[in-house]
Amino acid sequence: MNHKYIVIIGAGAAGLMAADVLSAAGMSVDVYESKPSVGRKFLMAGKGGLNITHSEPMDDFIRRYDQNEWLKPMIEAFDPNAIRGWMEDLGISSFIGSSGRVFPTEMKAAPLLRRWLSSLKKRGVRVHCRHYWKGFSDEGDLRFATAEGEKNVAFDATILALGGGSWASLGSDGAWVTVLAEKGVKINPLLPSNCGFKATWSPFLQPHLGKPLKNISGWVGNHKDHISSSEAVLTTYGIEGGLVYALSRPLREEIMTQGSATLYLDLLPHITKEELIVRLTSSAKHSRDNTWRKAGLDGVKGALIRELLPKNQWNDPLSVAARVKQCPIPLHGMQPIDEAISTAGGVIREALDENLMLLTLPNVFCAGEMLDWDAPTGGYLLTASFASGVFAANGVLKKLRATTAD
Image (cartoon, rainbow, N blue to C red; front, side, top):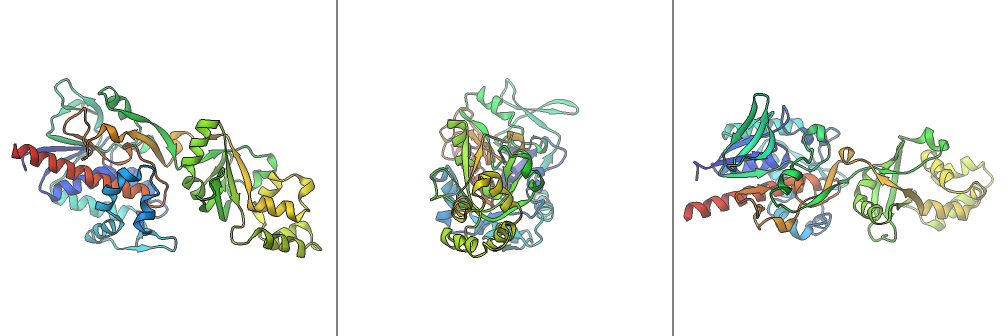
């Protein structure tokens, strides 16, 4: 099988992981990337600390994905422990944070990427940057636009790992959707995920925009069984942050079906409504600002209550407590797809065989975020990208072995 020519298009997490698996199996691998350098979105994801996976129990982990039944065998074959082991083999140790998230000890993505690329180079993987994939030639070869003009590349098997449609400047522009659709591949529309949502604030709240709402919880509609506990930030356009990203799927669905959505926040989730009423009542002799501050409603939290509660109720402990424990944020839209961290939608499960090969394009496989799955931030996006890259690479090996056997 070693003479087979395998091409991977896209040098992000999924594409590089597929190259890792195939080169370890002795395959000749060429990776084509549209940008001047590889792993740009991977590096951006690690700018504030590379959250590469999560340590929670596997049953809980899998439930974070909308297509969990489809992704389960992929992730179980390359699970968070396997990711940590792979990093260890590259000489990068990791640790589990207090939230259960897993990070490389050095926190940054760059040291891991450098060692990864060095390992791939030693195995003979060739990387070709500034090659923008344009589709297929009439002969079935891969077409690339380069600075020197169009270039056609023949292949025995190829893995498309072109990402979703967010952060186009980093390489994931979603242009592949049109190319594959013209080949009869069924694709669900790409939609923003892990994104900010639009809300309208009065001028009163302007001084507090950009400040974090810490130690809060949130939910959508009547779904209090699915509560996100994290942080959020009020912005000029609305609200963003980890808590919002974790709820982006139900918020998006509600906006798309109803035209708007309501995000509910509990600004003090660690105390009960009754306890809060006692705090607000026992400090009644103090000024309202002091009373609220002692109750935990200082800064942006207090400002948000003033924004959303009628002024004639500010001195009523019951009304204040009720709004604190269920603070409704009306939302009327999402941020554009290019400003989202990730995208939902993509190549649907029914367009692929059990090894992630496209049914309408033999020997063409797909991996990573271009597949139709969605997940929150917290290590889940990278884990599924890695795992699907491994799964597609193993699918290529199975296909080539079967072809050789025939």
